Length: 109
Image (cartoon, rainbow, N blue to C red):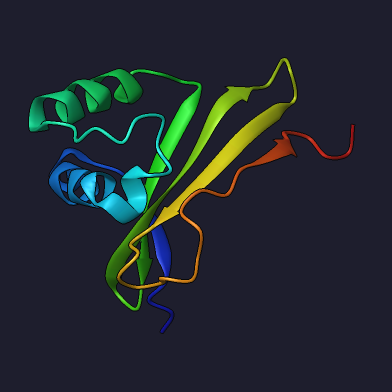
């Protein structure tokens, strides 16, 4: 059985994700390295939960949460999305925190 999967990010994941985001190894790649509070994390989640242009997932490897994947700037009219990936640096220290790419929504067009 393959234990690797993506699961939609939920409210029960926020403290884990905040812990990762506030770690110096991850924070250095963020727009700001300042630690974020639980209230800021909750406000962020409230925004993304109602935004059709973004999707977030928790990444599992061998049944263990190891990172966050997301798509943003989702736009069927513009025919592209942007993706980003973050990982639990304790699991994969050699993987860069942020990988960004641009993907066509409909690659046949």
